[in-house]
Amino acid sequence: MPINSPPRKVSETENMLRLLLCVDALDSVTPTQLWTFAAEQELMDYVSMRLCLHKLLAAGEVETGGGSLTEQLILTDRGREALALFGARLPGDIRTRIALSAPEFRTRIVRHQQVRATYEIARANDFRLNLSVYEGDLPTVRLHMETHSRALASRTLHRFPIHAARVTTYLYELAEQAVNLPVDTESEPLSPEAITGHSATEYTANVTLEGKKARFEIELLLPTREASEAFVRRLTQPGEANITANRLTDMVSGARLMGKR
Image 1: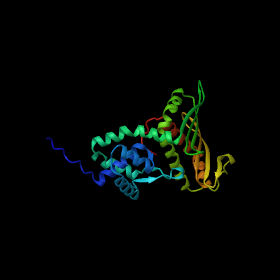
Image 2: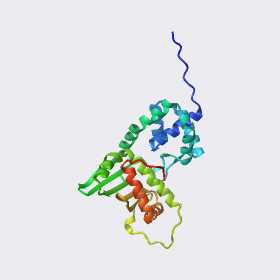
Image 3: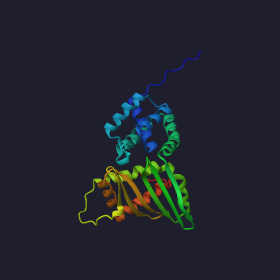
Image 4: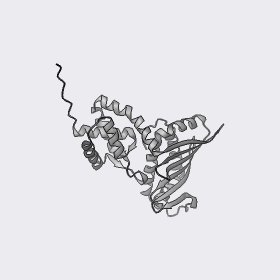
């Protein structure tokens, strides 16, 4: 009768690396979604997951987002460094399982978030798309995209639902950074259309960006008027607008991104 070896004991350090790899593979995810993914892949038990996640947050390797992403877990530069240094120590089957399962799980998250990608106009040299992410009655993110490229428009229509979480995270990171930038007291006042108030904690920032391959009209839901104004002021700077538009073009179409801004 064959003797089965006892299951390998997984250390706390390995469980933390597993969680880092999960958050990295899923782009951004809530604690509940992270537990669901970890449980489905049989990565660890619930108590281990909560303890390790607490330590990762305390160490600054994972952080929560801002604005409407306060429940989203996001990998920090410190977390990426830990993965780069020690991620190879994870068993190959664990790394493969996470990598292969993450895309389908992201798709399920997207369906729950009500991600939409539709053509407004599709004709020669004039392609306009409406891209949005709803979490409730108001759109968290809405992008009106114009491009002359049929190929770019087609890729965006099919790939935006897969990459919507990454786009949303990127825009809220920009908004968080904008709040901490010094205010130019001599800058022109914003137009009345730049900020739309819905309630005391819901404001939509509206800004237009011109890039190399596409033009975007962006609407982003933020919790304060001050945050909305800071976001608009940052992206109305010519250099910033062009860089952001080009990066969004890559993101919404699923192009390979070299490095992270």
